[in-house]
Length: 352
Image (tube, rainbow, N blue to C red; front, side, top):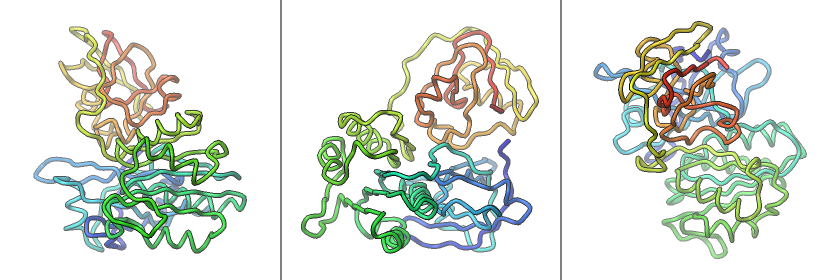
């Protein structure tokens, strides 16, 4: 069961004018609990003016060795009006303690021989940096192609870390940078990366049909466009892995489904169960949280997947889903923060 622990801040590194990397120290007794796979994220929380704020940030450092992580490093980009990102950039200092949930997420890769590729935008580089660094270090027969998009070179996160990968693995790491608001040297692409652009660009960069796994990460529009481009190029959906960082408030809402006048949710969480009535308009997560404050969640926007639960019985309607892969929903998993009852009784299992 995911839990929060206080971790001290060891370093605050300014990456760009609007982004930082936070390094957190993991004490020996928590290293096993904070063991992570490349591509996973952490939920951070704080309380401001009596309100609890949670946000998820991806780990950018390579996966740890057998002893577990001594440090955790995450990337944070300022979001306009963002309560936590503003706090991270303007107030967090070395020596502060942050409440950190143990790692979660399924945007991961088990190192294996072959060619892998990623299309990322903005802060979407963060988990992919961890994935690429881990893969290239652990699998000598693996290659990685990174296509990254940003506004300008000055706004590009982790420039030094990506350059280090290029220097360390010159024959196995390919980097293509596309800037939307800055002209580049002759022969280098510029402008926005959309479906049409990627459909032409990707086959020119690498043999698309030989890529074992595609990793798409960044804003909703870029990830959606990249997925459609890959499908047009004949890539199987099972080879495409996605993580969305920023979603427009009106993006892809589900169609309304009539709800029962009265419904009850039964939930199993950390080995204990309970049943509670669902109030009008509540998500199932909100119902569970009213009775179990330890229910797992972070974004409440259908993006991070922290509140994933198995639907044991009953039917639900999800407003939005930007976290679960098709095979997960087919297997019976739902996002509790986006789920509303369609039947009078619904049973969830957060422990599966």
